[in-house]
Image (cartoon, rainbow, N blue to C red):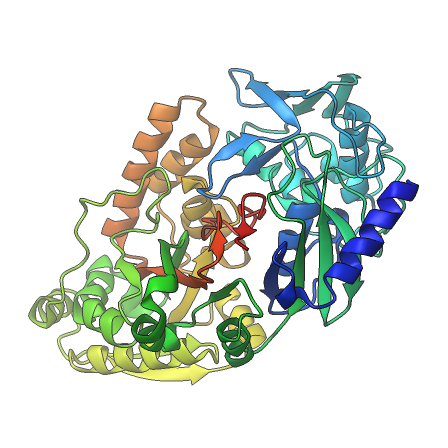
Length: 510
């Protein structure tokens, strides 16, 4: 313990001027994390930091593939209801104490503790989890630890994506001895050790010399809190950051001035306009298809978004099982749009309201859509509101059209089908189109319960095809992430999901 304390002091001193230390990686967050305690993780910033400090039974790699973490392997029964995880031996927390199955059990119980303020929905599928979280039971019936290296979960219903839930920050493993909140001095088993946290300023982590997965290539990582995009860019250009994300509005400047430093990656994310399928003319699928034909998505993407996206012909993004690159998007065809409107009984069009938040790029896209729909006789009123007000209106079914995006909580076709289009999830559940289609519902349920991976991929394509035909959205695009990296940085790639980059292979050359 004395040697560890000395090491951390030395690292902190060496990193006082991170720009002068070639062994220090320099990252940033746009806001201070809410907490470094997995049980209290509710935001992306906390999740990113927790991923570096802690381990899970399983985790996502930089390409969003599910890979072993503390568990070396796992099995599922034929019903997709019982999962058995086998832990690797020799894993220790940062203070040297061994990590066992009892720590896994304690971490799950802690995250679900009655009154917890955490985002613990990924753990709710466990049988008995709800009763425990609501104080009706003293334990979780579906969580069993038969020995120090085995954990068995029994779910309340079949769910083939459950292992991916266990890769999320709330399921990170803490010592069984952890108190109610140890955010100020987090103790994990991950590749990085906590050194310090100056709130709203910076966090500092040191390499875990004894990490079971191998010591990180660099000595430390300093994570600054920099909310403004302009400041982030300036800090990168003066060498004070190792990487920086490029806003859509700055794409052309960075391509011209720093093209050789840029990385691009299609995000696992949808950008779309939800059409409320229960409101007036929008209940007719011909009208919804007409809206798609009326909007010149290709032009909007290339002009407003600098081409940073892949045209959408469905809701499942590239890189996720079930995405069909051969499916053609709705063609820009105003005449076809007018024909469909006339067939549906609206030759002279009708009025609609398009709700949007105050984000700059959404404002410009909304105006372009307004103009395009106006050209086929549909008068669109744009309603700009704060994000909270827009969310409430959409969830209550008060909007005709809503422009927004959907980020993957986990990389699986289920995440782009079950919440977005199953009738059980109208409104607050994510189905902002209020779509109801029994055939689609049945396929989505099978998609999330089958244990046959080939059948799952087939179902994902069938579901996405059906969604495309029903046109509950104006399908826009799957955005493309763009980051710049310093010339002396190697081993870092844009992660497909935000918890997929642990910086273990990143290194700054001397």
